[in-house]
Amino acid sequence: MKIGTFFVYMIKRVSIQGVKGSFHHIVAKHYFDEHVEIDECLSFDKLVDHLITGQSDVAIMAIENSIAGSIIPNYALIDKNNLHIIGEHYLDIQHNLMALPGQTIADITEVHSHPMALLQCKEFLKKYPTIKLIEDKDTAETAERINKNNLKGIAAIASKTAADIFNLEILAEGIQTIKENETRFVIVKTQNSVLDESEINKASLRFELEHKRGSLASVLNVLSDCRMSLTKIQSLPKIETPWKYAFFVDVTFLKYKNFEKAKSILKIMAQEFKVLGEYKNAKL
Image 1 (cartoon, helix red, strand yellow):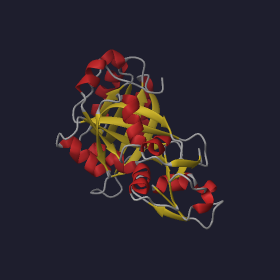
Image 2 (cartoon, rainbow, N blue to C red; image 1 turned 45 degrees about the vertical axis):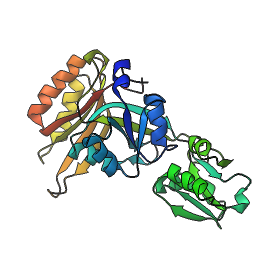
Image 3 (cartoon, rainbow, N blue to C red; image 1 turned 180 degrees about the vertical axis):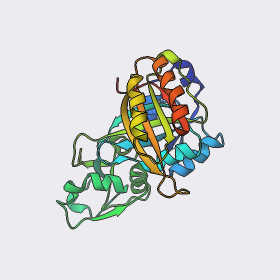
């Protein structure tokens, strides 16, 4: 649990992308507790809608993966809908091949899963060239469907939690090609941080710059001078303005007053400056 007990008590419903047993669901259990109500959304767009309309108190969104990199559409969703990042959680992603009990890999004709999961398990799946790979919306939702419809000969790639929930048998564990596979999730809300300043040591920023030499370097120098450690920088094109980009930056710091100083300078230097979130660094 990464946030205050009082805030956890106030949270009753958490929106996740996917169904119970998904990696988003696992993060919800780790970050909050077992008693929060889970709002299952099969798309990030629906997840954001539920948060904005008050159908949930907070939402969990995957934002980057150690193998695949940034999930750029989610940066855009957070920015466009003026959501606030109030926390983060890193999850070790272990992919497992699972099917109805009593089967072996030799019985499997199709493997269904999210495209990212299939990609991350490519080397394992190459060992079975006769098995057809089917892209699906969500890892756990595929496991649920196999259970619900008693689909023999069909396997899913999903978490051990999904196997437990949907009574599937794991045929092979940890089948991802790169064993160190971690995803960063952010916890988002429609309001700003719930933490005291003394607990805040990480922030996510968004800004635009004039298209001139040295503009980005100047911003990075300010962050360095204010004792900010840059942990992430991501550019995103502005669709309505060709060849203009917004920058998304994550910084960590030891003293909140140093961050306040950096904010005051960047508000002057940068265009469309916005703080997307102030929260606690989950890597400490």
